[in-house]
Image (cartoon, rainbow, N blue to C red; front, side, top):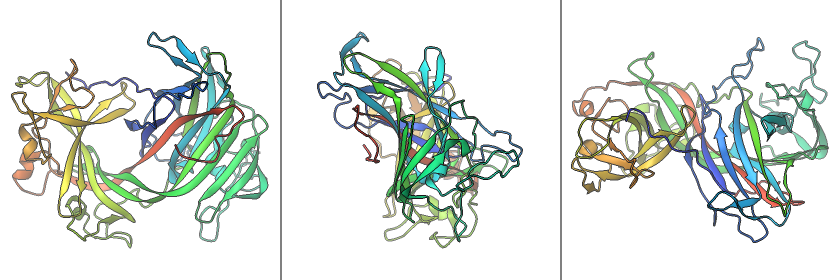
Length: 490
């Protein structure tokens, strides 16, 4: 088997799609799903479901969308979703439909550090054509104070919003407690699909710490709201790993946790209304652009640099050693939970193993217990489509060389004569076995044998290249006339 196992595009009804957002870029990889109750919205006359049909690409380069010359550095990413007011039977036909009119809305739930730099635009698929149904919404131009009349900063005769800065040099949150207006025509055009500009009536505002709620309403009926609040959150920072600075192996990711500001962005569009007493389905595309580079201490951080006030150690190598009880490991104000990285492993079609049939990718994750120990877990990294995004799922069943089922603790030394099967393939005819021979849990060594032989290790660690967030995309349904705005998280 000379290619990684392909997993069909996952489809979700009525609830959550969780994606990871990875910098350099922002990546929609590592799918998992969560549900609340039954996956069908089963109140008798209220029938609704949705599918995430496709994501066009999984990464953004962390840079300004436009160079100073005006040249674009990238293209918008797209998320394609289908909403319907009926439930399909086993044959694919309509088994029942909603008796009442429904209003669907998009919801994005993601860290403010990312959301502040996003640009959103929506279109509806009508036959083979895409009909744009909203202008671009530049989230930062809604959240932050801007020059009210706009400014012609580049001499092109167009007044564009310029965000206002405070005495500390940071951007100032907008205050709409007395009302306010934003004009989408005065936001910068990030390769916008043609659509009539809107004047947005603004209400609400954010506190000095960034928490709060704002709402933007257009005469077209489009409504966008942003709710912000702090929460403890896990994320990762990826470091360049290789033989030297010109060698790029799988990055080493520090797994971290700290309190961060999150946004819940809700967008309701009149075109997303579904009429009751009639089976309907509509397909929409969300265009996502990363407008500006995200600057922060986590980017371009040198692995060898001295500790900052928010670090607990000047020796970055200690981040690779399980801490003792009472010890603290902190990176830029975040608690260090452990680390992970990807390795290549051989695959076998049957056991006892004969000649290897191909290779695949395994993720090694080490989680510290802060008692001097750590737990190793292993995942299969499989592409969902040819090149866009990966489905990362646990390897939970293990076998010896003869194919006998065994239990393991996950220690690297123990895994050298072990074969694993990932959870989505267990018991299927297409299952194949992943060999752990040579798979090591230390990021500086090529394999376990190299580590056992001693020495400094073949690899070194350099500057940070990426940052991984988790975000949620989903669709909400309410009875037509009700509102989904307000930021209540599912």
